Image 1 (cartoon, rainbow, N blue to C red):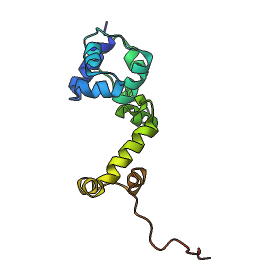
Image 2 (image 1 turned 45 degrees about the vertical axis):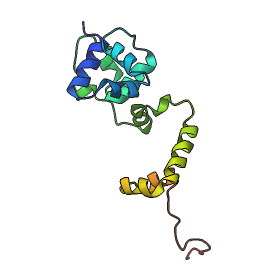
Image 3 (image 1 turned 120 degrees about the vertical axis):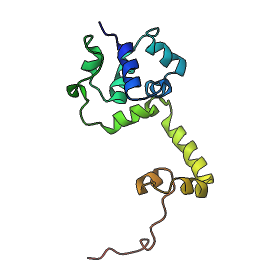
Image 4 (image 1 turned 60 degrees about the vertical axis):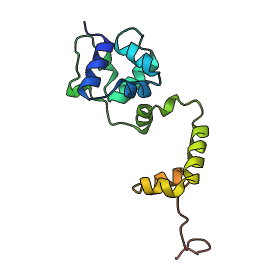
Amino acid sequence: MVLIHEKISALLEQRRLKKRDLARALGVSPQTATDICKGRSAITLPHLRNLVAFFELRADFWLDDHRLLPDAVDRAAESSSGEALARTGLLQVSDPDHLLRAIRSFVQRHRAEFLAHHPDLTPDERRVLGLAEPEHGTVGRIAEV
């Protein structure tokens, strides 16, 4: 019988991920992630949901106690933005608006340095961070008919 913690450990090794990556994905401490990998800590339903999103594998794979590694059919369907957020650990943040305000404030105070380090930000990413440049020539313009 293959247990979930064995699958997690095998996948971390196969994908060259660290337990801290797992900890972020599950929204737990690194020690708890280690305990999960060793079978000393239980997998909760929220953990299972985050495992599905993080590894992009269907829940059926995690519940199948006969296989250690996934097959092609175990791949989760097209990832949604919610699953992408779950992989980042942002879904565990109790007040995401507060976090975003703090990040925006910091980024805006260090605007030049931040943009120098991240010149490849998309316009949407810049807008979310409060770094969007005003569009020149659009104020007061009458739409052409």
